[in-house]
Length: 340
Image (cartoon, rainbow, N blue to C red; front, side, top):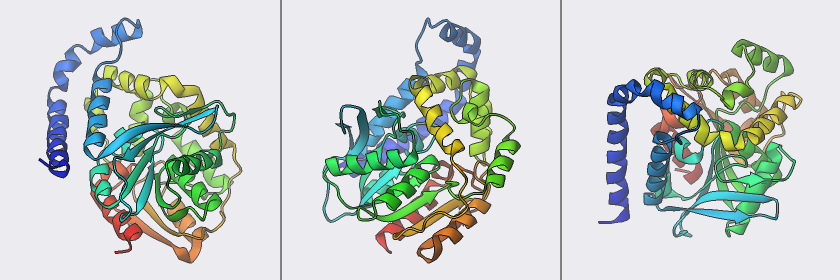
């Protein structure tokens, strides 16, 4: 059986398993108070989320991707998912995640399709997953420089880049700072262009500290994050608290301080309603129901980037377009980057 067919079969059964998972959650829910109580006392480690995480890692492997770790220097380590065999007749695409998890969770809907047309590289940003730095720089520009340096260490000098949410900030900086390396840019749901008044209004509308939502500490924080990020957020209603605590433990607890510092850097930056134009062609994609970065910011970015940019608005999709509309997103990325 060839790898492509095996990957398709695994994808089918994974989707079915996740669907069935919803129906037996009520069984787990009967153990909710008991398990969450033990978790609070640190008597048992997380179980369910690490198991799903292992399955998603297996799925990435079946999509012909392998994990690799690169030490950029004695301070900074980057983790990537890389193609098993790089094919020089295929273009290279770097896909960059945002807050709310790691790449295996954010891109599992997309990797199988994208890996067919591209040499796919999927990094963990610094302070997410297995990437880490002792350097004190928390800027998106530093993230960008590290990713480009990591790609060069992997032997890749030219590539397109696709970033979602915070990953879009990093993708933009990669293109701005390294125009010779970055060929095309796809930015999804990234509020890079805004005024100071807009920033104050958006943060005020949320009604609480945004860092406590994007780097959640409690199930209530995570529920609010999902409500903001998804147009259809009904699934969070049947997710028991102990599973949400496990997710927070696995995704955030080890790197909580660094993740908050990255966010604080962005929040303290002066608002810039006019960003430098890029030399590369840029595709901007936005959900029309985005409650994190309202769609008006997409139009502002489009105007700021000028004639080399193109804007696509996806209907009935929120901030997490990569999860809510992965097929449409993949079609847009393929058409734009491959030039079809």
